[in-house]
Image (cartoon, rainbow, N blue to C red; front, side, top):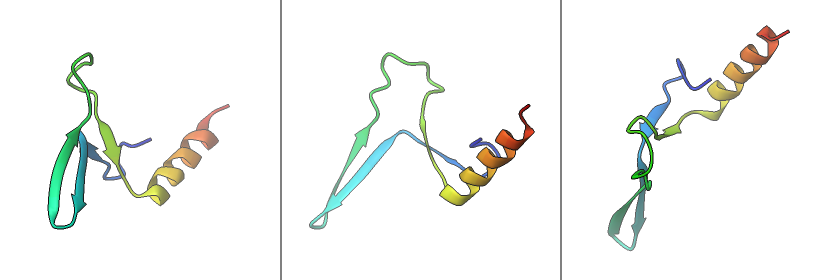
Length: 57
């Protein structure tokens, strides 16, 4: 359901505090290179979930 809703592929977090920043990557050593998180607009995701659910028997 994250396809076709402009979901951005993400590989970790960026933390900002007091003018400083750092990156925290997801620990992916044990996983396939296609594994990643997704960032998206919640409303679009919910709408796709509803469409998918209504298409099921």
